[in-house]
Image 1 (spheres, rainbow, N blue to C red):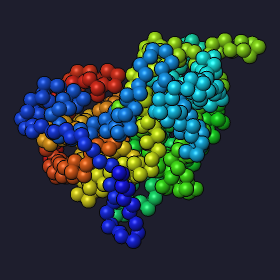
Image 2 (image 1 turned 120 degrees about the horizontal axis):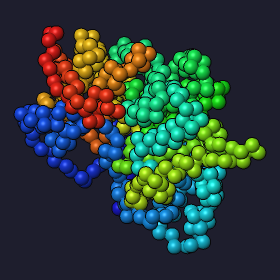
Image 3 (image 1 turned 30 degrees about the vertical axis):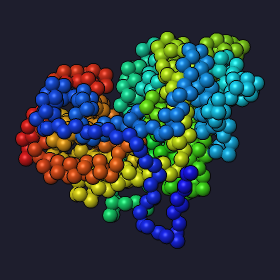
Image 4 (image 1 turned 45 degrees about the horizontal axis):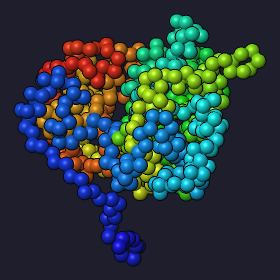
Length: 554
């Protein structure tokens, strides 16, 4: 018999009540500093190449590292591995409609539950799963999805970006040979920026840098100030300076991952939409962490306290013309992604070709579908297994759970406050939704130049001494030395401590706090780094070779 324990104001404990437990235990091996040093040398000091099995805490990324729930593991057994129109295809698209378009839980159809009950009523399955027609939104269904495809399952976010950018590149190159375009964002992530640069365009990051590094008295804000917002004045100035005809897309990262995981307010999203509409430029969201952003809006923005995460998500997505998604984050899953654009919306209008009578000559959705099929598989699965599709569908619903999201955000804040209270300079406060960031310029007291790649030195020294892997997202990864002065001024020289969903305990976080405190107190001994191979490679941090050299300014 299942017993539910309800915490009551009558019997306060002044500690949070647990919301989950786990039966899966994974041992961490004992590894010496000398062993880690040998491996660092053998892997050319590339943190991505360091074996995960030799780490004590791996905070490189929260992508696909989720500890899935029992409901997700159960859903794996429902996975349909059929090549064409597997059951999960219908379930996943309708899950997206539920959360992103239907306005909250009261309107969910949740055909997932129908599949979970092993429905054998063919007529019911035809009526509710296989044959419903949808059009006019981000997720066409039935004949509309075949005639005007606008939703594309992809196995992860960077592949989604690649599919989108390659098609946009081909269309722009055919229409305007040799022309260079500019694509602004509140903050392009490393892979987004890499894909934009490979299409020959210029990425720009337009956020409030002066606000980002402000620390309130005592280290805490009463309300989150939405440091991930786009600077609307900078956006409009950029568009008018380069010309709207030279800005094919406006991107918005929600939450703003490269800008320290900071949230974007609904008010700011509306303003970005307004400016984009003013100049007829499609607005594309990067929505890897859409649920975290919805949580921040609920907790901090006036008018949203009584709305659910799903209700807020529906409004957020109403303002975009399309989106790219890594579902390995707020899909609460180990694999998955999506590209989608609004049926007959601005993206479709701007990138499709039409005959003189207004009929469609070339549908951009068809081009995207051809690319998807040729690179990742049939549109029913797009490189995902049927099992992963079902786990993702369950995970999307679970990310709408307030208790889960509240616990996740508070883990991040615990780590950030731990660094701050330990006296570590440069901690970005408040914490973002998925990670804690440290400003390396402030950490090193402004003594390390951009050419030293000191943030990468910090990351590698954290591996060497303590077996903790993080992600440098500053001068080295974001290619400060290869940028224009305007782009350099827009870069945040930070290191990211990503927190896996439902996996790390307070014990892990306390260990990380102690390690960073110790390293901060000995920061003058942290070596600088130089690139010895792969300096100009696209997204160089994934494969370049480095070597350390001593910091001489002590």
